[in-house]
Image (cartoon, rainbow, N blue to C red; front, side, top):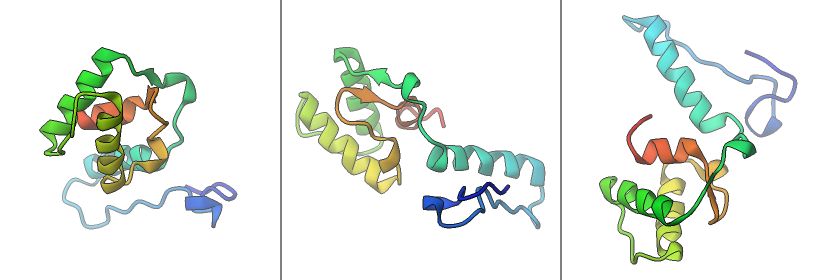
Length: 114
């Protein structure tokens, strides 16, 4: 797919370039790759961001721990320091939105739903 300046960082027009030429199940593989593309490159819907209350902090902490990420404490700052470190390793920096809102895609990844 092409769109003017649609490539990574607006550096070219190649918005999506996925190939499944030799895959034994090309349609399902293309669907899987398209899902991953959306996770890593689709812009976050600001209206879909979830507020971070105590329950959300608990979910984030548990998700990080399930992924083997050490969380230094129970407080918001400790959880978000760990989340930002994990997000950097998972190439999700563009989906991290400060410490008062969470992208639902990040939450789904943490909870193993993507």
